[in-house]
Picture 1 (spheres, helix red, strand yellow):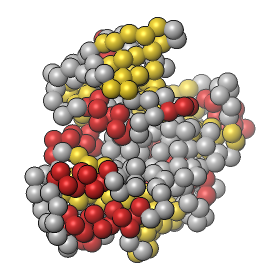
Picture 2 (cartoon, rainbow, N blue to C red):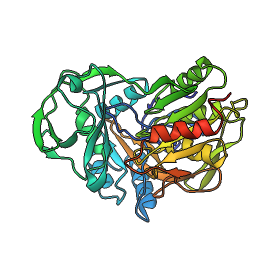
Picture 3 (cartoon, rainbow, N blue to C red):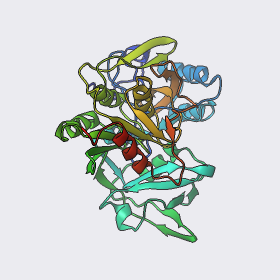
Picture 4 (cartoon, rainbow, N blue to C red):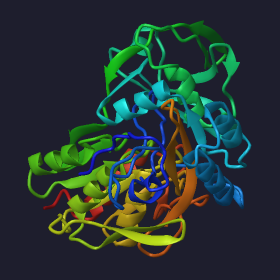
Length: 388
């Protein structure tokens, strides 16, 4: 697997040879950013964008050219990104971006919250890390996050929410959170800490089912999934839960696809009009019954994985339509270490489908009141998992 480090001053050669294709998003407080191990050569790290207005790719390309040519400084670059028309292009200080790189290695500075955006733009706590500052502060999954340091986060992109949660990434600093639970509103101010990510969790369920929950494709996630598959009893069905998965390293997502496919196409993508492809490695398990759980928080690299397994006829995908984040971004680094991430292209699934702005439609749509896990177990049983 290729590494993700970002280094060097912006140079025109870096825009081709050191391009990273990005399909990740940060939904946890540092739990994942997105980075493709660079399939064009060299290594870089970045996050993805999602649906963008017409013309935004050209606009951000011009900004990247200006940065590469040294025509703009950090303040001007930040202003240009904000006016680009692409709401998913972002500007980060060097310290903020270092935090994203750190998260890819399985650790992050934060308070232990995974968040998602739900109806009406509300931000909701998706998961609270055990033993984290957020857990000690009494925050629970399902709580609404209204404000961060007094600023309303309703309607804001989740990437911006995460950036505010992380602050400058210094452990020991406090972050004031305004929360809502039913009719109750209150505030807490937990201290940020250096925490391990919990990207892959495995449970062995009744009826010979192994449930593998992947929250983000951090470094080593594919290896953890493969070890979980190797440790299960022969014949057990697999429930691959990608609900709320924030994306991450696409090399890791392709690695997971390789565990279930015997070679073949995973996705195609374009960068500045250049067509490229991603392929699974040979020798994956193509026989074990497989169900993939998705929802509106399944994003980027997770959508790529779910859609590839669906298009290849390898898995039954159930849940609700995924987020629809299929854009590619390239990081442009300025001399002070700050980074502008700019949209440069899009990817498509093996059948030629675009995910961007559309998402992946599940084979079986599950309504909000239905127990998706129980439905998945029923499908696996029907596929013969418990009988093997």
